Image 1 (cartoon, rainbow, N blue to C red):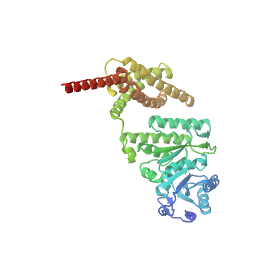
Image 2 (cartoon, rainbow, N blue to C red; image 1 turned 180 degrees about the vertical axis):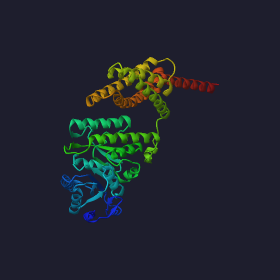
Image 3 (cartoon, rainbow, N blue to C red; image 1 turned 135 degrees about the vertical axis):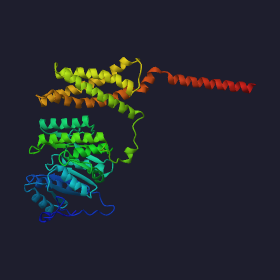
Image 4 (tube, one colour; image 1 turned 30 degrees about the vertical axis):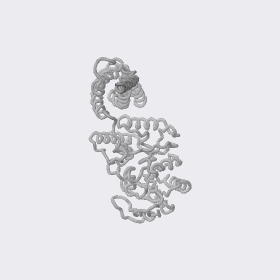
Length: 448
């Protein structure tokens, strides 16, 4: 790509609040795959030049595919746009676009929606993420194996240097995503992501956020559409000069999570899914079991909330939590035994309660841990704030409880093997007896 925006600074024309950008020309059939790297910036004049030159040099020397770096300036009030325009004029395969409105998500949406590249990506301007992870990030997208890819600072293979405050906030945020929205990706906030352009452009119309929750919402929608998300361990060093407003970002993220959860319940997040997902089906009986388990779980949760608030008036949080969990766990196991898995009668009822108690212990461990973290982060938390944290922990324990009940406690195959241990041998002996009798009868007929 030529330096199409090198002269953009001299062009006052705007289109939809975006500095005019020369339309990309699609390459001829059989061309090499193109990767676009977007660097969204807002008032980053002090670091932009150094970072882009470093990124450009690294990709020029080591990256085996054609690339384009696009600096997306979203409403900077310093000289960031002038620096970006100068870089576009100086360096080959570097472009710059300017938006009149602030918002990282808005900047990514603008560039990605108009990209002609095969893979689109972005990284933070401070280059906190080690660049050696970039090729592993985009390789499965270029091969068609995966649909989106993210760098993960919480991966076991990652090497991360950052303060305890950011570490606690990051881990708590990602834990909340997994417990409340059933997210399976490990790190939603790392500024190091990529996606196949056709997939990203199909999702953009359903992404509402324009700021920091933008990429989290994109990932959640991708998961609910059955798309494949690849994770890459990264080397990451915290930028001490980061000017992200943590409090405001946390509030916006919580609002975004609530919006996605509401849309999920209403079915508004259902998007076209790949053929491989359409062909996949739930195991036999699981759809009915999930519905029954959800109804019983909702009733158990309401009972737990009421019991906890009552018990908390006269006992410590840990004691109130344990007693409320124990009471609702017994009732939950009994109800699921009868209605979800169809086991009736008193046979093995006590045994099922004991085995179901393992799920109770998991829930108790998780909730006690969450209480300890809540007390450490917010020593003056109210009873309702404690309860909010406990609901997240119990949501994760609920998933574990269902899996344990289905594959172990109430597994029909396990019951059959226990009550008919010699069924296979008996069937084989019966078959052999029938065969012998048939042979004897045949011999008698021949003799007559």
